[in-house]
View 1 (cartoon, rainbow, N blue to C red):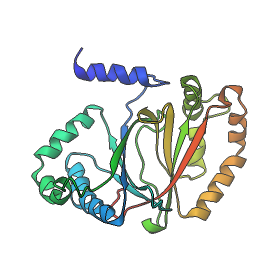
View 2 (cartoon, rainbow, N blue to C red; view 1 turned 180 degrees about the vertical axis):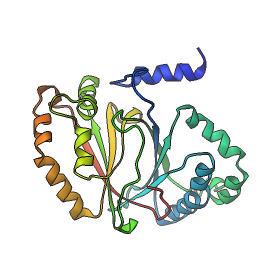
View 3 (cartoon, rainbow, N blue to C red; view 1 turned 90 degrees about the horizontal axis):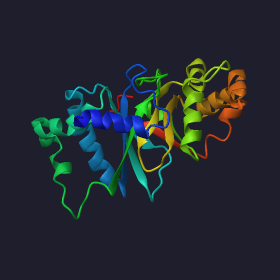
Length: 262
């Protein structure tokens, strides 16, 4: 068994609700979370992402990259989120080699890449790997016409108490029953989803994550009010199998950087 087959087998094994070999191709998503301590680090990271990293990923064949910042900044844990979609798992491993051989990237990112050990550009990088839901196998750019700085991007993380409950939540999103699916409700109510994904590797598992987008906070609140009152959702949530599937719901409100593709 070659290494890619071994990795594919591992991904099928760790997935709590895998249909490996039975469904259409789905993207893989990496979310890199840069933890920062001050504005100086944020400025250095912005310079690197805007002028070196994002252009290099474009040259490597990744057409759209998302860069997001916290709307409400926590001074004890400042963060920048980078969302990278891959069409194949092998592309994740190949990216490192491509960046090393990209002279434009290494020149444009020199200040960041060669930063001194006692003046780092960040505190730590957290990395999460997801696989897109079958119901939305690739990401979508939101159809919003207002300025990026005004928007609200909502990143949700649903943790489950066990793999069994996590599998039920994934079924509720993707396959449902005669009552429909949770995934079908969001586009009908114009939530402008960017992605939905099951976490394959990360510090909080079992887990799924997704991102929806809105014009502003008031628009976001109105959408969720409509969702909670939706008759299809009321039927779906009442099904016994889907009870107690989320043990922790973490919500982060973000806005896209000016150079973000999403």
